[in-house]
Each structure stands twice: as C-alpha cells, then as structure tokens.
Image 1 (tube, rainbow, N blue to C red):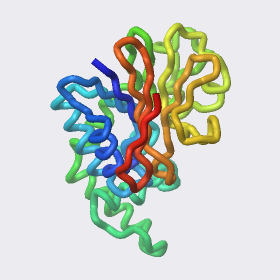
Image 2 (tube, one colour; image 1 turned 180 degrees about the vertical axis):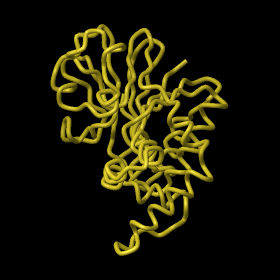
Image 3 (cartoon, rainbow, N blue to C red; image 1 turned 45 degrees about the horizontal axis):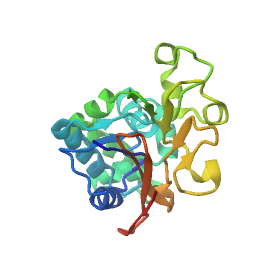
Length: 249
C-alpha cells in the first residue's frame, strides 16, 4: 500500500481532483493523508470540505486540522471581533462566498454580508463545522509523523505538552531546528518557496523533515508526496489552474 500526502488545498477543488486523478488514486488500495487547510483564499472551500468529509467517512482517509480550518471554526463558534478579524485577514471572504453565494467584494457592504454569510453557514452547514472541529492534530506511522505546521523541538514529550497553536501555526522554530525525533515529520503550512525558493516538495538537508505545501492558492502548485511501503519517496504536482501533472522520482 502506498501513502499519498497532500496539504493546503485552500479551496483549490479542481486542482485537488486533478491531482488525485493523475496520481491514479485508488481509495480501496491507497492510504491518503491530508494535512489540513481545506478552506480560505481559494474559490471552492465548501466543495473541498464536502469532499474531504466524504473521503474520511467512506474510505477512512486521514484528514488533519490546519490553522485555517481552526480560524473558521473559531470565528463561527466564538462570535468575537478578534476571531472575525483574524479570519478575515486570512481569506474568510472567499470561504463565506463559497458557502453562501453572497458577493463580498464591495468594501462598503462586505463586512455586513460577511456576518450574514456566517449565519448562513451556521444554519445550513453545522455538519461541516462539527467535522472540522473533530479533526486530529497529528497522525503517526512507524516512520513518519504527519502534522499541519510542525513539532516544537522544545517539547520532548510533544504529544502531551505541545500547544494547539504550535500544531497548526509553528514555523521558524520548527523548520530551522533539528527535531531530535526518530521519525521524519511531514508538514504543510509553510509554503515550500519560503523553505528553498521553489514550490517543489522540500526535503530537509538533515533528513528530519519534509515540507509539502506547494502554495497552490498563491499561484504555484498543489503537491503530492508518495511514500512507498519500502519508504521511498516520489513527488507529484499540479500547477494552479492546470490539469497537467509532473512527477519526480
């Protein structure tokens, strides 16, 4: 059984499905792991959440929680200005539009429509919110740890002591320092272009981390990391707004 790992779909529904098609994803044979950030910035967040939920329920796909998924839940659950402002800064309008069909592009009315759209989501898609809330923060196999943002190297017993924020938000203190773990950490969250000036999957020089966020929603690519039963790696990608696929051994 091969393992396929994808991160940071961010509403890029068409690219996600093009990637699954072109890697010849077979749910009855392959293990698919999605490491979070299904919503925001892209145009089809609702469709992505619906599909991911279906994949989890029908095929046992592993779906982890990302910081954007958490921001959506917080803004819809807590009803305070701080959570609203944070979500709006990070792509909430596109997500609300995908659920409600409201047009939030007009600055003069966008905020009012955002509030209306939030109510629409809460009233019509509570099952999506409950699904996002239920998602775990990490997944572990014999050789790998899968997580949205990373593992804080300051926490020796990270499963017990690492904060929710670190699981979904950590950056420099994770990827700039050795993990000291006996398993490789596969993560998204930080676009690969910020790690090695390329949207290709990033393999840490010391071999302890693999960063797979291709920055699709920013115009780059959606990456897929394939892990064979023997532990070998192969990478695939679909470029933003394209269905052509490339692969690298």
